[in-house]
Amino acid sequence: MSLFDDLQLGFFSVAPTPAPAAPSPAPEGEDARFARGRTALRARTAVLFSRLQDMGLRGVEQLVLMRTRTVMVSLIGRTLRVNEGYAEAPESVLRAIVAFAIARNKTERLAAREVILAHDVERAPVARRQEPAKPGDLAMIAQLTEAHRQLNAQWFAGTLKSIPLRLSGKMATRLGHFDPGSRHLEPEIVMSRSHITRHGWREAMHTLLHEMVHQWQHETGRPVDHGPEFRNKAREVGITPAARRDVTPLERRRQRQEQTG
Image (tube, rainbow, N blue to C red):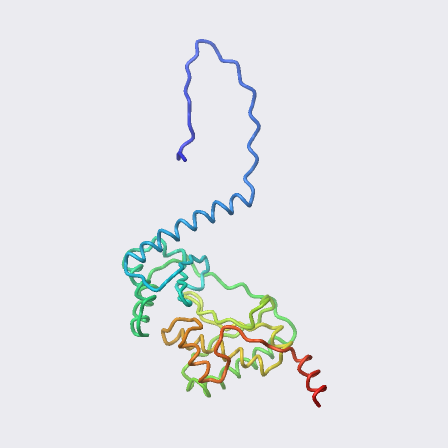
């Protein structure tokens, strides 16, 4: 497609008869704009993936460009997720992304992470969207904060940082989430409010420990994923060594206890 509209210039001895006015083109719909943007994103992703492979990227089957402002680079299984702001980063930064993805130990990964985060892809700090607090939230957050402190001392020798804990009512399927933050936003753990109320405190502690293992991965320079290191640490702290687990609502557990009692 040409970058410029075609322009025809004519010279007439007499004024030409005006042609009937063409109907105005219909405004571009949301679907068309979305499709065009998606095509452009796929192209940028393919170009960046090729460049990273030329620089030595191995063992990665998929590259995903993200528009999030909280995660810069993450490796989950064989999928490498990169903030789209790095698509035009200088070669030294791209090589650091490759080094992060293929690092054999946490020292190499931490060194690469420093180079990656030194490249500014954010124009200004962007605050997280906060949900309106509900009755009982402050007390529940205080309990979660104290539980984090106790679990940190029990399972991580008190080495984990004290980070904010937040409740969310928008988690349809997830029980919790660890957000590693960025240079402008500190890490946090988000817990599903409905998970705590439906499944009880014991299950909530299981979820909190799961997210604390992710916090441990992040703070020690490991990939934040559900790979072998996560599974080993999960077994060590006594939780399910998997990304997902089945959780039974409190009411159903009570019914089972009554039936067996």
